[in-house]
Image (tube, rainbow, N blue to C red; front, side, top):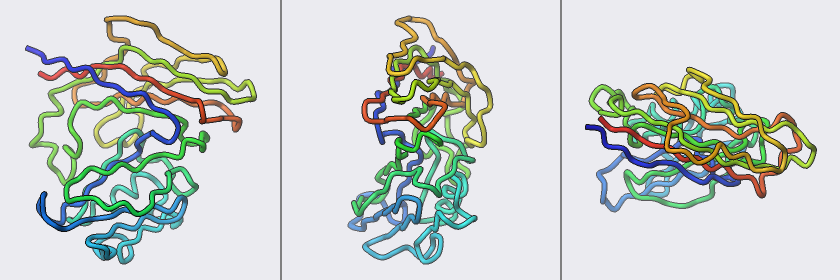
Length: 249
């Protein structure tokens, strides 16, 4: 028998989650703490107990402007090279660039061991991101450090039921909402399932329905992206509302 759970979110400006990370250097509940400070278009510094962690990047600092860490995939790989940290891509692909203010700056905000921390997109940079959301079949960090063979996410699948979205480009540019199936490694858009054309500054609504518009294959995710074709994007009143389901075998 399948267990069906409603999933989804209402995404607004600067709320697209590009990657999630956590510090696993010590046991959950310990007195130790961590921090992740992101300077937009420059560096990500990971610290433990107030000291930059030398097991990450160059003495705890990952330089996003270097050719070694200028994509989302390279950034996540650099974090996962350390046994003290875990990171995974969420609403994005490995090829997404991160060296030009695509990621939202994050100031000091300490967190506990194993606490999930989100790194978000700067949605004013529509040339790269716009607004995005990922319908995921599993739980966070299921595929980190080779654990995917031990997990059950591959027995689940997600489905998309409805999309509501709006953005104002202030220039009459073409609006589109893309639906892509992606594999757990986020290497690429495995399949383009659909593209909905929209109208500038007018809500696009696929409509209320009990049926599924698109299903992903078991273990895969659905990436939904709201984009415009030009540079006139204004993210202040933009939103992307995604409603879907997770089917658990």
